[in-house]
Image 1 (cartoon, rainbow, N blue to C red):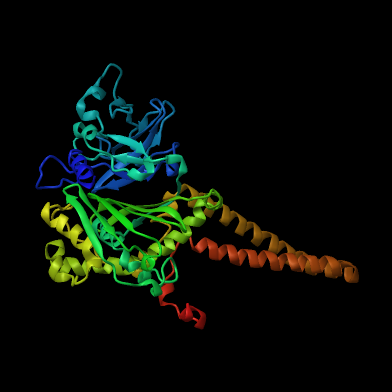
Image 2 (image 1 turned 180 degrees about the vertical axis):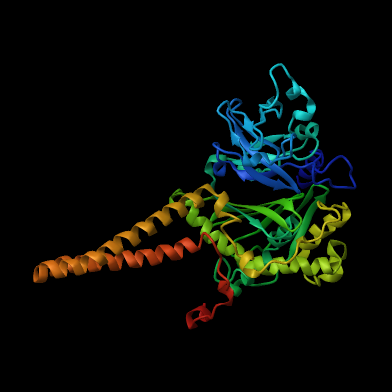
Length: 469
């Protein structure tokens, strides 16, 4: 069965036709959850160093992805608008483009001129597809797009309506391969994520096994599984270059997946799409998950990502200084089978001579505070978090205004009404205190949309109760 799956994946032609080399452009990549896209305006994204503009073509009722560059004077189309007739309009001189990338009009030319029909007036359009709630783009040769499988999570196609999925995304300050290396390594969970989603007490030997591999990626298993075997066997699938999932079925939690896509933005930066599908034995857990606001889930998941964000950023730079992936066996000391998937990933990189950014080096180091930025790496691009932040800021402003009015009115009542104003003053004082507490609490919540915590939970002092557990 495993060999058959591997053979089918080889036939998908992902990574190009050369069996000895993987071409990062000949792959479908997710770039946005569809629910976070805005049909009213164009959005920008960078994929493999290529600036793109995403926009809704209402004429064809589909999402379009163009090169983010007007052929006239190279202005970014993402700074333009979707015009009244549904075309994408350049902000510089008003050149407008249809969903195919053809130029529809050039306002500056005289009547009867036809400069817009020239191929030089067209914008490059990229193939797009929507699968499992995500917008995928194909950056390679457009003619190859139909021949290459879109990297979907295959188990989600089985009884799709039975899955409950929690998802998030974030732009991370390190390469897609560094992210893949981290999430393939389940053995770091008890330590790195201690007191968030892990516990040091669950640390134990991890005996991994690779059961199939090739240019397409690899499959592996952990027979004992997490938490000292309490949850059962865990199967892992890596689909090159940027998708992996762990698959676990247990009596306690039903079937759960941990899915990660790593979409390369530029050297030293990628967009993570994390998905946590659950298939529970009963409907109640799924119902409770659906009640939780997406933005609240994102705050918690951002905190978990920050458990390892700082040291992964530095680890990547240390590896580059030691010769990069070509020299990983000397740079890393990997004596146990817990690192088998990391070894397999690095061997895959070296075997197929791949480098998505040939000749590029990591950008200059940035301070820790910027590494923990949540606003630009997530909030501004997330429809749920962006809306929640605006509502929280409005509520906070309202609490401040009401509290201030209550503080101002209280002494005026005391002067004008004397003893008769005691009850009113007490009510206004209580109101001002409640508004003040609300203003402070909303302020703490607001900050969580902008910045992460500088000290991860694993490094906080432990109470006697924590040590006993």
